[in-house]
Length: 89
Image 1 (tube, one colour):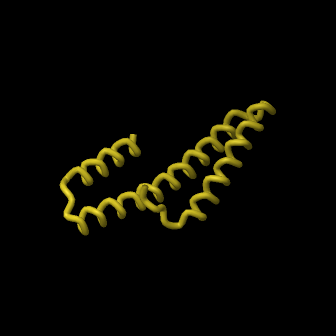
Image 2 (cartoon, rainbow, N blue to C red):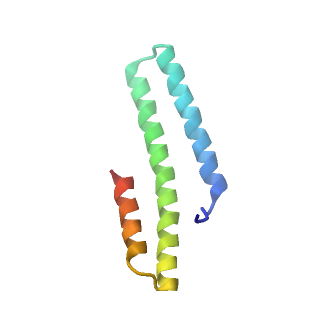
């Protein structure tokens, strides 16, 4: 398993996202205005996309580094491409 650089900032972001989700749950339970709830959902989605982007960046760097250092076959690059395609769906 590869090491994720800057783990603590990513964990902190995920905790903030968790708080956002709990806030959205509370808004729904309290029957708040739908427009406000949707705004919070969009903010949580954007925050989650940012975390995913950071992790994808780390993964890409590790894959390319391993590929270049070890002169691995194209399997490493194929796996990286598959991961990027799955992430961007």
